[in-house]
Length: 242
Image (cartoon, rainbow, N blue to C red):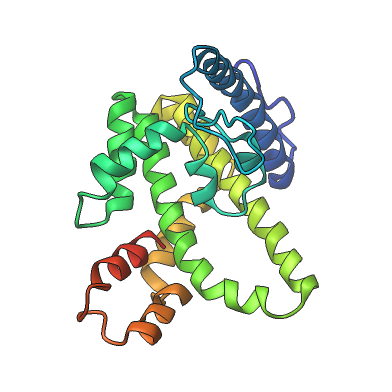
């Protein structure tokens, strides 16, 4: 990839480099989009994607869909972006790993995915970084969402644009590491970012205190003590998925 998309201008500043790598990442993703859409078309032609009819009695063909391009490119958080990539495999990993691991199921799921892809160093660096970024973004959203989304449309849309930019930067940073495969290439690539996307999630996870999601608080208000009553398992499950 470095030979196909070289950085020829050594004077390029960090912002231009981030933009450049984001465009390179998009070009690489387009190749995967083509394969995913071709696979969806073949599955639908065989009738495997049919999932019934909607309210207007129109057929729905999303059962075998493996990609949601708009959600990936326009997502404002890492979770929605990653869940829209290789959808059926993500569901399988959620059932096999995430719902069965008691300690840090998010990181365990990403490490399992790296092992499933192979044994190249770039796989483990990329997936591990993506897992850390996902956990850090969850923690920061619980602090930032109430402030930015409840104080007028200007601040709300500024927040949305900023989170979209950060999501795209982080997707590029972790996914290109997987594509580069070898450690020296990943190290050189990440050095253009000064390793900030690797260090920032660690600082967030270590220094930012945890905060309950609003949904978890609402469940406490409605049900009282979550340890009593039949709704306890449901509340625990929802709070785990936030």
